[in-house]
Length: 264
Ligand code: NAD
Image 1 (cartoon, rainbow, N blue to C red):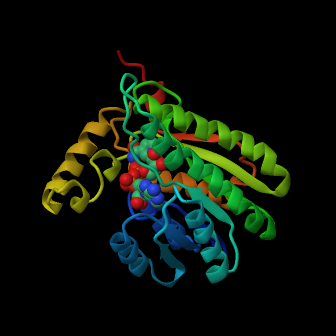
Image 2: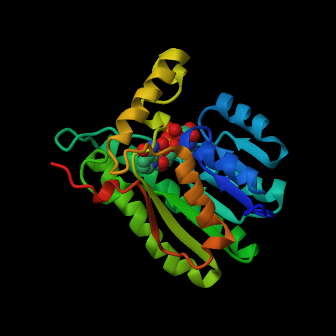
């Protein structure tokens, strides 16, 4: 079968774990050259070694504009251009409705929203130079429904989705499609605080937790199926590839039907 991203160059933020790592792997399998960022150099270097010459890890922080710009520049310098940007990096945003602090709000906005806005900004010129391309923003069903994340996370993800739709209209004339993916509950380390080192558990305890998580998440969908990082990678592949050429300013919900499931 033809590779669906043959000849394309992608930047993926937050590619050292979960959805971003699965997407980096799938994109390379499908013929793309990929620069991916993330916080763990250990994991980033290991994944880059596994993926081979078509993948480069960049230790960039998406809350820092210069790091976002540098990741995109690295793709252009090493692989010649940019065709796809997947603004994926993210994580939980602490803060309750009755005790939220300005620092928590700022952290959430920097991590989840500014990162998307600045990623789009820095991708425009290279995407234009490549004759157009695709930007994909990882949003969430939390931006659609109550009780899929805390209020801060949900409100910011709603903003990510709305910004995506408006940016698609602004950039459409340049041949740049901007779409969001809203994952439902996907079994990734986001649910238990990252790597074994980060959460102080052994690898074995983490593996056991992951299995338990998968069983619990399955119960939250009508199909009783667990959402996996690969399910979101497949959606990103569709939106980033030429198969998605007529899809713009769209929010692709990938949640196994969870947002339509009403439960008291
Ligand atoms: P994950 O914890 O497995 O991976 C998060 C990635 O983002 C890691 O590579 C991490 O290093 C990176 N990251 C975090 N902060 C960063 C920073 N400041 N700079 C650079 N990289 C940073 O989580 P995941 O589930 O794969 O989440 C990926 C995206 O999907 C996030 O935006 C998240 O909000 C979104 N999402 C996840 C789910 C889910 O159920 N897992 C559901 C909806 C949306």
